[in-house]
Image 1: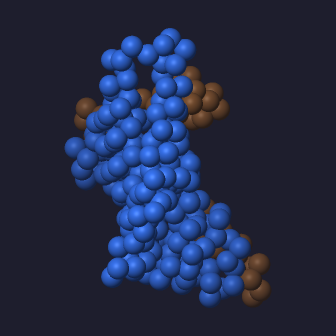
Image 2: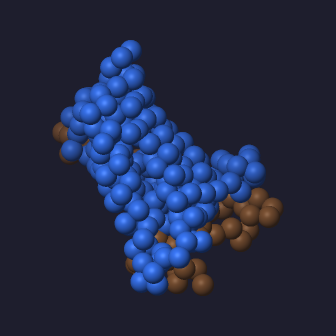
Length: 191
Length: 57
């Protein structure tokens, strides 16, 4: 149990996908100007990463590994993520218009989110068992959501701040991101 | 059948699933009030990105 807790904390905070691995930077910079958008994006990423991890883990150990075609994993996982995003978007369009209003516009952005691919490849590379895979696939998006929401709150305050002209927008955002990365690196001794 | 054959069949199935889900999603009408929702991505301004406003305006 302790090992699983350590894995979760490590995935969410210490090896944070954005501030430590620098994947998922596109939605991190693109959809963090408003905190409401950041929460929507975080929720959509959490759902897609978890669902993609379950499907790809099953496909790898039940199809690719027994057929001895493990070298197909990259292209397979890309297609699984793309198909899953299309399918999820179609289902929520049909059955849950309020959810589509909240998350729908972020789903196409997730198809190109390398954080999703990173998680599903890491699950295989680290030889996680099923429980570890579930914990890791929940820890990573929780860390993503935490960082993007905190970042969006900072950016909202920066909009109102007296920022020098040439630092407005993405430059000050990247400086903030660097400071957050340094702060998160201080958590390395936690586990 | 050698594993190249399995790989090709598997690949064809995966591509087929993607095409089906893509067409299904494209042909599903958007709910009322969501017709003009757009992701307001203002990130890297990369013109080659499909989400750049230049591709939707």
